[in-house]
Each structure stands twice: as C-alpha cells, then as structure tokens.
Length: 203
Ligand SMILES: [Zn+2]
Image (cartoon, rainbow, N blue to C red; front, side, top):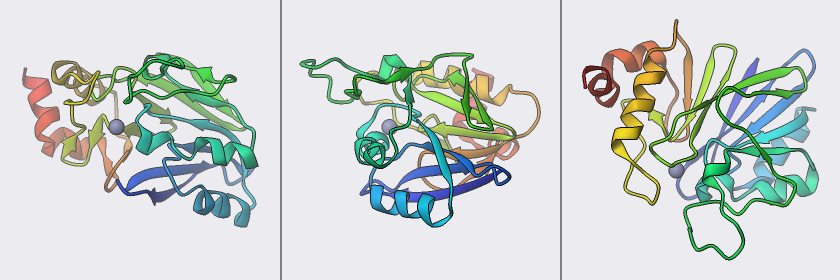
C-alpha cells in the first residue's frame, strides 16, 4: 500500500492518495483544494481512482470534491452528520452532491482492491470519522501528532473529542497515523506523548 500526502490549500490540509500498488486502485481522502495537483498525481502515476472519502465536512477538507469528480465521477462518502441541506445556514457543514454516499460506524468501504473500515470519532465535528486501512489510520482533525483538533466550531465538543481519543488509544496494536494536518505519526507514539490522549485515558 502506497500512501501519498499532498498538502493542499491555505490551511495546509493533508489530502491522501492511498494506492494498492498491485492493482493501482486508489482512494482519495480529503481533497480540500488544489484539484489540479491531485489529478496530476493520479494521472501521472497511472492510478485508478475508485472513490473519495471525507473525514469530515469542513471546507478545507472538501472543497476540491466537485472538480475531482468532473474528471472522475466516483462515489463520495461522508458521515451524514457533517452534511447540511440546501438552504440551511450551518456553514461548517458540507452541502453534498445529490448522489452522495453516506457511511457510519462499522461500515466497510471497498475502493477496488482496498478496504477501509469506518470509526465514528466525533468531537472536532459531529460527523468526524477515522478511516482504517490495514495498519493505517486516517484520523482527520480528530488526532494530530502531539495534539488534536479544535472544538470551538459549531458542532465541536471537547468532552466528546476526548472520548474519541480514548477509543483510538484503546485500539489493539500499533498503527501509522495520518492526520488531517501536519506530519504523520504512530498510535504508540501518541499514546505516550500526546497530552490530550493521555488526559483522555486518565479522565
Ligand atoms: Zn476540520
């Protein structure tokens, strides 16, 4: 499995292209901006995009979805709790296209030969999820290296986020952690050094 990080947009969001190198099937996580760079990477490397998955609905993780789908009309998945309907004013939620696919806790999503499982990890937003593929966790803005996502936006809740961090820390074994911003880490490292995760375990 090949994981490419493309850091995109003004808020330096990590957009991930996850590829099975034997089939070249790939999944795109959080295309927040710069669709041109994302599409170039996929095309230049001969990857076959199978789906788009969103860790949550904030604009810096979702803005390039329509332009990527003009080139590749693949399914897009998000947790329904981070979406809004036309006319609703909740600016922190995403207005999805009509053919959106929703995922929730425990779902398994196939992206060609890749398989992801969905954990709901709310707190940064109501509909935040962590996506698990083999030994990799894509944690969105739930868990960062040495930190966690902010909770002062609409739908954010620190107590709820601490519960999500506790749940992640209690996963069995170690995982590579690919967060929505800044550098990658490992779950074992965060269990030891992440103040918020440690606090969540004690509290
Ligand atoms: Zn966010």
